[in-house]
Length: 105
Image 1 (tube, rainbow, N blue to C red):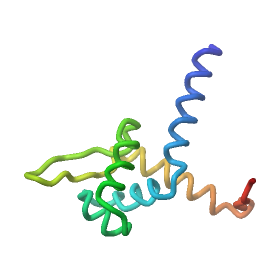
Image 2: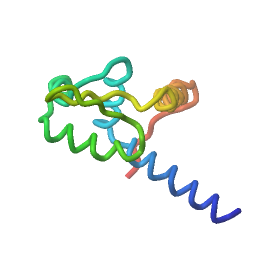
Image 3: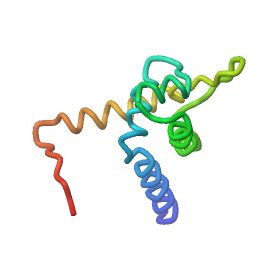
C-alpha cells in the first residue's frame, strides 16, 4: 500500500542519512573485521573518545553496530554481515565506470 511504501521510503532515507557522514562510515569500516574499543577507534580516527561515542550513539539504534562489555571496556563490532554487504554494494556502485561524484551546491 501507499502508506507502507511511504514508511519504508522514510525509514530508508533515515538510514542513508545516518550513513551520510564520513566519520560514521570510517567507524563502520574499522569495525569490519574486529571488535574495537571506543578508545581504539578514537586513536585510529584521531578523534576524542567523546566524539566517537557520540557517533556510535547515533548509529546504534539503526542496528549497524553492536556492543559487548568486558570488564571496564566496551567492544563494538558490526551488527551483522548485512551491514558490511550494504557498504560493499555502495562501494561497488561508486566503482562502476559511469559513476562520477559531483559536488552540489
